[in-house]
Length: 239
Image 1 (cartoon, rainbow, N blue to C red):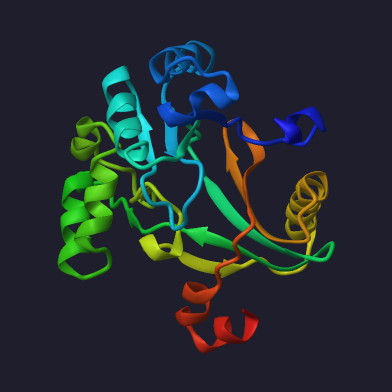
Image 2: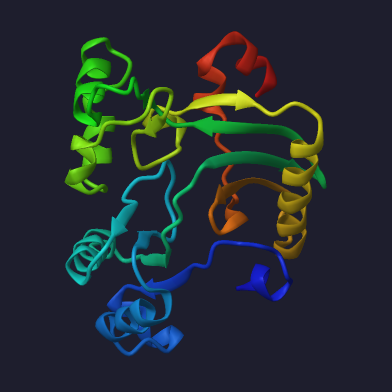
């Protein structure tokens, strides 16, 4: 909300707090709060912990049953959940912010299969699994969050079908360095504006592109570079 009030493009997030803490934020019940957000945000929804790392416990919900399942898992421990509109992300970038500068920007490319004009998505995924290009956990994650009818579709030659729900490197995504230039300038400008508004001096800012435009997804106070550094010696040096 702070970013929106400052005129900074950001994906909306709304808090649903664990029942034992609800009274401290004026939340009468989890159910009532959830209904309010469904009414204002619509479907589908992204449901995720308000803390944590690595994209763990991130759900795509298309109905009330899915929201309830996600909140039950997240609020099993005394914590909060964040609900927001689901974005069909076409690109996600991470901008590392240090003292008002952005010394490192990279894109996180999800695992993918590419259409040949003859094979169904299911056949392409099975082939990628057999060849070791993707692992079973990535495919399970993807299947759990997409319509089964997608499996029977035949992508056009060269058409990319992204696999996996999350862009996290730990979930199979591959980093691609963003060189100096117009894109890097645009990403750093947005990330630095968000960091200044929140008073963050050292942070990692995730910026996403979707049909809704380019928006800040998260500003993370924890800056994790271990998986990036482990990707290759070149990335070790950058980290």
